[in-house]
Each structure stands twice: as C-alpha cells, then as structure tokens.
Length: 577
Image 1 (spheres, helix red, strand yellow):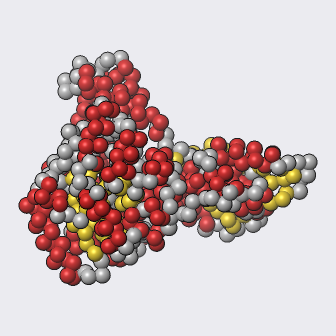
Image 2 (tube, helix red, strand yellow):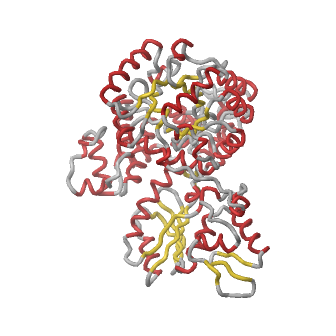
Image 3 (cartoon, helix red, strand yellow):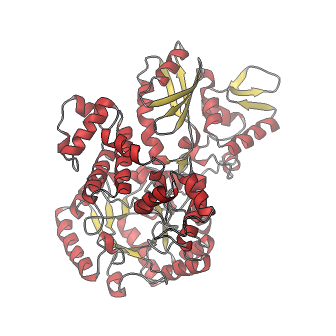
C-alpha cells in the first residue's frame, strides 16, 4: 500500500473509534501517527521491507507500528474491519457536519438509522432530528444549512489530497519503459481548490495498450470502468476517478490544452480560432479545409497560432486571460523564491506541535529571512491561547532564541481572536508592543450578514491590526465561508491599510481566488502565510502561491516579498495613518 492509502485507513479507524467513544488517548495516538505519516516522503512499504523500526518515527508507538506493518503486508487492518462491521463508513462524514460530531452521529445511527449524508439530510427535512435528546430545532436547522452549503463539494477532493493520491500513480506510470511525456490535466493542473476527477495524458513509444494495462495494474485501482488501446478509466480506492489517454507526440500540446480546460476558456479559444479561419481540437490547430496541422506538439503552438502568448494553466478560467494574452498583458507570475518570510505560524506556546526554536530552525532551513510566531490569544482556551502575561514570557524566549539564530529575524506576533462584537481578544497595551497582529475569526460563524460584516469591519478599524487572517473562516469541505459583505470588508482593509491573508492550509485556501481578484482591483495588500502548526506545514506555501497566481496577484502586491525593514514600515504605516 502507498502512504496515502495507509493514512486513509488509519484516519477512518480513528474516526470510527471517536464514534464508538473509545479511549480518547488511543484516538489521539492515531491522530499523532497520522500527522507524522503525512510528513513522510519515503514510502512506508519500503521502510517495512527494510525492517526499519517504525517506532523511531515521532508519534508512532508499538501498536501503530504493528498496524502499519499489517497494512503493508495484507492491505487491510483487522481493527478497521471490525469497526466497519459495527458502524457504516458514511458516519465518518456525518460526524464532520457542523452541529453533529461523533457522539451525535452514533445516536443518529442508533435511533434514526442515519448511515450517511443523504440519510441525514432526509431526516433533517422530515423534522426527525429536532425531537432527539441533545438536538432541537436550532440544531436541526444548522445541520440542514451545513449540508446545503457543502453539497457543491461532495464527490470532490481537496487539492492537496488529490496531489497526495496522484503522486504514487504518476510514479507507477513513469516506471513503464516506453512512457514519454506524462502530465495531469484538468482542475488539478489549474490548481483549483478542489478536484472532481483526474485526466492524465501520456505519450508512449511502442505499444500504447501495454501502458494502459500497466495503468490498470496500479495497486490502488479498485475498479476498471473502461480500458482500450489508448484510453482507460479507473476508480481508485480513495474514490477518485482517473482517466488516462495515450496521445501521439504531435498532438500532445493540443490535448493538454483541451483536457486542462476550463471549458469556458476552451470555448473562447476556439471562437478566436474560428474568427481567424482556424480550427482547434485536441489533435492540433488546423486551417479550415486543410487537414495538415499548423501545430499541436506543444501548448505554445496552439496559443501562438491565434496570436496569443502562452497562458499559464492557473489563469485558464475565462476571466480575461485571452484578452490579456493578446495584448501582452498577462500578470507577472509570483515565484516561490520571491517570498522572504512567513507571517503566521504556531508553536507549543498554543496549539503548535513543536517548540518555537524548532520552528525557527525549520524556517531557516527553507531559506526564510524572517518569520512571525503568531500563537493564539486567550479566547481559544482549548488550545492554550496566550494571555498578556504568557505573551510577555514568549517575548523573552524569542529574544533568547534570536541571539542563537541571528541569520533570521523573529517577529513578535499574535493571532488574536475577533470577538462577536468586533473587539480584539487582547489588551491594547500588549498589542501595541507586537511587530504585527493577525486578527482572525474562530467562533460565531453563523452571525447574520449585517452583524458579521460590522464585526469584521470594527476589528479592521483597530489601529493594532496588521493582517486579517483566513478572512472568510471556511474549512473545505466541512464549513462554508461566513456570510459577509466581502466588498465592504475589502474596502475597509484598503482604507485601513490592513493586509488580507492567503492562508495556505489546504482546508482553508482563504481568501478564495475570486475575492482575491477583487482585492487586487481595490489595491488591498496581500500576505501569503502557511498558518503552520508543525515544520512540514511550512512547505504548504506553494498552495498559497498558486492561489495568488489564479487571482492574478503579482509579486509587488504581496507584502512578504519585501525585505523585513520595508515590511515592518508598511505594517506600521497603518497604525500611524
């Protein structure tokens, strides 16, 4: 089994144990193991085959090590099978619905036979949930609203999850002797926040049918729905549908344009071709009435044939990119090396998983010039939020660590909660002594639109606020964005010179690209932050960069491309404006 499949089964086991209300320390052991395994780049199967002691990995005890060996050697886990014999797999999604949770999911299964989201929605619409002990009409309505909001994401995978699934499949295909060019297309290549299914394109020397058979032999293929000599469609154990197409080298670029999409982008591109007496298909670009291709082996040939610069996949959403490409006006793409630091991360002072100094060392290893530790404020008591006294204790530790690591600037920061009335969860004297303040919403997600808008506008008007963290508070696909007047929010951010965050965590990717485009129009400053809780989360920066690129955000719009003194001057300008 690959790492992703092992993680999936362990995650399901932990979730089912939650529903069973098993010992919380056992559940936590599974969660800790999953966190460790998510950061592993070496296949666990290779470690097991080499006889490595898996307990040497952080968070892996003897029992979890045995589970991993069992999964590698048999493809199954007995404890997982036993739990699925008691509870339906669908309850794992039911428990994630806001207003439910594991205990209530078990009760809904036991008392109403709710075995999945469809059953839950039917029960809510029929009014069967409200009479149950511990629910009520308010709970029932909240559940129904959450189901309606999340419906658009059903059957879709978060971008990072899709990346995790496709990497071993691509590695499997590259091991085939005759494979040539190979790439994922579709929404994955456009780096959309969720992926519905996956298109792979390949060229092959010799027998394409042999490559198709190699594809369908991938160990995680659960079902082969179609297989021919140049195309196959399979369903993976994860639930992701994957199509592989083997195309001629001469048509590869045209096919890549076609299957990357978006549909709207392609329609506009073909219309432009028709206006010039040309025809574009997945086989190439042709002059009307002439079967010899003008191009097709490379993507740039397709765009050049209709008078356009090559358009990066992230931009292909028909949001004006063809017009810009024709006028030489495509945005300058942001690159990873242009980001000098990360302004939002956590340590064991609140809910981070490693010490402050360990985060400093991890940031140095990634070439950061500066970093900001922004642990939580006291309203988040369940994660050990800092009060004013502990905040000052942290400052003293920062000073000590800074002496040992002079190569990187450690900024004093705080992720301060925006309370229901828009006030900040820390005294003004403490806030004034910070290098920057990230203000975020972590509660009261269901406030009415006017009240929610006033709440955030009030927070942004506080002179200490530097950055609005994960502005819409969403959690893909569990929780939708808060109901707010986004335009009013962004206009306030512009007027108050407050930066809005692109939070790189795959479950957030907040702000969404469409709102980032509006921020760009208004001239709102942007920061790209990982919200890292452990060192490997620092590598999520790429997801925020891709989100920025999709929104046409250029390097000069992003504050953490600046040297640290310029950055601090820009942030300080808001306080003195």
